[in-house]
Each structure stands twice: as structure tokens, then as C-alpha cells.
Length: 221
Ligand SMILES: O=C[C@H](O)[C@H](O)[C@H](O)COP(=O)(O)O
Image (cartoon, rainbow, N blue to C red; front, side):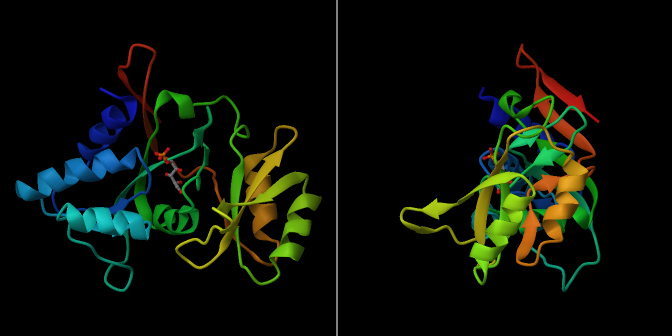
């Protein structure tokens, strides 16, 4: 079985009857959502809060009832993927462009489970370029300010046009020449006018589900 399927399906076991569940975005949590759809068909009663339009569509196809922040105060459990997971369980997210809604939902959740195949596990964050979501207005100036923090920046494209997030924003994929302090950089980036959010998730993951060399499930907390 492929690693994404293994960890994605494992996460679905943590979902209990009556829960409000944050539904992450990406090719790993895809398997969680399919599994939850199967469980819903067998009688599991949950409500999902999707982190992207893509996930909303998938959850509807799977028959998972959805809700939103007008109707609820809190999320019981958020399940999401990641692009990198450090040994401290800090994350880089946003490879699929869903980081803003993902962070809002992770912050609203009592517990956050991350599903990550072994390729995502790193000692230190930074190999994967950090996605930074910015408003289209003034993005040239915002980019200059991001660069003054020491990043190299590249506007994410979708064919020849700027990639547009579910929130109508752009993304700069940002690389750093040396290791950075995730907590400090997360805050410094968000102080720049025009930066809406960045893909550093520091101290937000309660549990990471991954696999070891023998493809055995490993839980890290
Ligand atoms: O914006 C996308 C999300 O942060 C995803 O959770 C992340 O990119 C991991 O996706 P995948 O499971 O497809 O590698």
C-alpha cells in the first residue's frame, strides 16, 4: 500500500461519532476523506469543515455533511497534510496553496493531526520553499519586503498567469539560504503589510502520523 494511503487512512480512525472535523487539503488527506466518507455511509455522524474548495467538493462527493464558522465555535479534530515536518513537529504547508484556510482551521481545532509520508520528515525545515500568501495589490512591494528578510522569492504561476488562491490572493514561494528560526520568521513575515499568511505552522501539530523504513505506521507527538 502506498505511504500516503497508509497514513491517510490511519488518521480516519481518530475520528469519533459527533465530532466536528477539519478536513485538510492534498493528496495524503485525500485518503482520510475517502475513508471518512465510507464510515459516514455506515452511520458515523460527523460534520466537516473543509480547508479548500477542492476539499469541499471531494467531501460533498463522499457524502460528508459540512458546516462552517457561522454555525460552530470550535473544531474537535483537524486532519491535514504537510510539505515538511521537522523533528520538533513544526510544519511547512501550502504546497497546494491552501495554507490560509488550513491555518485558520488548525488554530480553531482542539487537536491537530498531520498525515505525512516518510519523504516529508526532515530534521530542520527549509528545503521545501516556504509559501507566502500575499494580496495582489502591492505584491511587487510586498515581495521586496520579504526579500529583506533574506528570502529568494518566486511568484507561483499557473501556466502563464499568477496562481490565485481560494481567497483571491497570490503566492510567493520563498527559499532561504541558511537555516531559519521558524517561530521568528513566521511572525516577521506576517508583520509585512500585504502578507496575508505564511505556510509555517509552529507548535500546531499535536500528533504526526508517518511511516518508518519498514512501512510501519509511526505516531509522533
Ligand atoms: O496547500 C496544501 C496543503 O498544505 C497540503 O496539506 C500540503 O501541500 C501537503 O499536500 P500533499 O499531501 O498532497 O503532499
